[in-house]
Length: 522
Image (cartoon, one colour):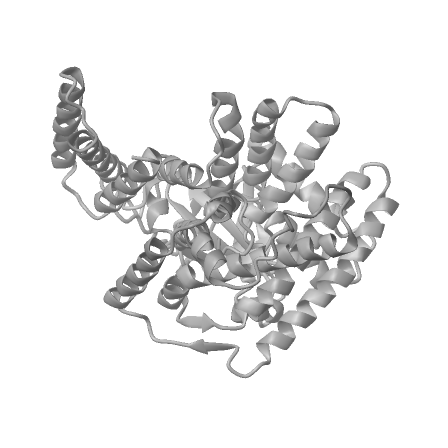
């Protein structure tokens, strides 16, 4: 196979999905052992040809993934907490609590938590069961922070999240802190995130709605956004910019690589310094599926020169699709995981076909004399970047629209033109936020300068999104499509890709998928 990691990733994902929906643990384990034994036997006898050998390996990977997923998730089953009135819950905060902007104006905090003690009235929920806690009540009560242990009285079961996680509700007066967080690397990352959130508000404290948008875009604090503003971004298909993903990792990596280039660090060694810094950022912002995917792709992409390999976006995506489910098999069923990987895969696969089909490639003149670029060359380069952004946006929309209709019952047509304005605007806000955090180390006055610039950028973005949302036919609600219709849609896209061979430029542009920009809901 030209890209063996792609085949391995497909087999691994298929096996994980089968294992999540199967309880026959020993059958999958026995099948994996037999297949691996057959593959090794063929290799030992030097009959490991490209046909039977590949089939044995892929089947072995599929069976191993199914056995691992079934053993790790099947035994626990679907653990739901059924709290009783007189039974307190003791849980530890998995991440910092976030203040939620409710429509009624009530003070509310959302806290991801994990049970630490068995509840006497609910033996079906063992320690380690995760849930989201909504605390309603006084806004003056301290917000639970990552690593703290809390005891909650009179909790009630609420709705499930989009990813299937259970939600409990309680009043702030019936919850209290039992112990503070210990000191560890993850705790330090979250502490740095809280300090960054405070600095991003310096000088613009009187604009809480704008501060909430900047914090959501930079640090992933999405719960505090004004509901009306969040709905505008959702209706226009631009809410993806607030998911910590490839765009955020690309900007941070760009700043770090610029610094390393100025310090004359050898290019093959960049991955060694990038990996821990990017990992700290992803962990501190909540480690969402899209962020983990972007981190895994970036690390693999930048580590390729260490192995004397050429970086390849498709192989990096395939490796990330194996690493993340191997650590957490349940991610395969998470909507964020599915949308993130589907959008990036679509951009890598559809970009060459769209680039060849659409007019106006704006290639530089090969017969032009060598020398500094003219104003026309600069304009042509800028228009070429805008065209590439439009193609990536269209590719992400084409592969994401069936899934968005399936999960959310909505299709946004305004997302295609809106992303041409919102994605560059969010890029500028992210750069301004990074400069605010760096310059603020010297003095808060410098942070206030960049924060004030972001105030105008965010205001412009919200105005553009509001205008697109007001257009007739900008979005429409749809019924959930059938699996047959979704399969037919993707078969048509796949057939179009194979019928449109990529030229050289399109193939190289596929590496954009490592640091994607308009990635659906990634």
